[in-house]
Length: 326
Image (spheres, rainbow, N blue to C red):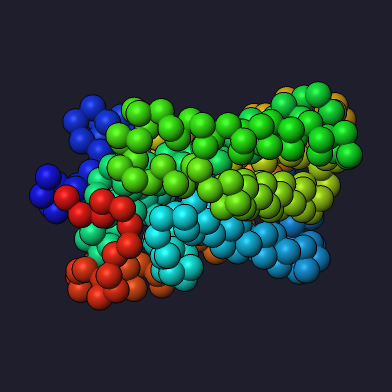
């Protein structure tokens, strides 16, 4: 496989491209729906936002920054057993990926492939295996959090035990899964990303921290708007927002709509229908805007660096990744 073929590996085409373009159009309609609903009958919410303590707004932005750093660190932790990638390099790649996910088609994954193939000379299968390992951290932590919250709606010691138990079991099981010939064939030496329990546990911990930042950001947004949600409901909203933001149809609109709809379903009665609808759309938009306030400006700065690195081509540092080249 040629370099140009590998560099296009993450680029959607054919049916995938059509679905992503359709997903962007639907997502755009959803975000317009949220904005219109937030503006109709929700004057009280906007007044509360205008009067909000600047410290709370800063805290939301701080949670967004911490979340972005944690995501870049997850890529660092998962590849560490097989490659000593620079921490700040992966932060830059992650920021560019997050920025490009706002595009009409999800270019974030493509940008990861393009950088690591062009600059690091990783093989397509190696990058794919790496992304799959990162995906495992999402599925494992989100699944454990949902299960724990459904069984123990009020976070505490019991919740923590239920949350941690499946993660510990998975950490023990992953090295055995890595011995499966099919997995070894497709990871091409990258199976050490699954067998190093220390680093995979670190990745799980970082993903749990990331989820915590999403939950705190949502909780602060709810507090600003005067919405009284139990901690368990805030956590379920955070899980929903995080997972839906990763959907293959696009970043824009889908997450905001999912948060607004689920929040309305979870909320206790008390507000009128129109006001309730507007308030939860405001919640979704405020939480999303807090993330965008970090992702977009930092992503644009990182994109300048990314373009220069990709144009320069191969890294001058010798590759230590197994089977990095074809």
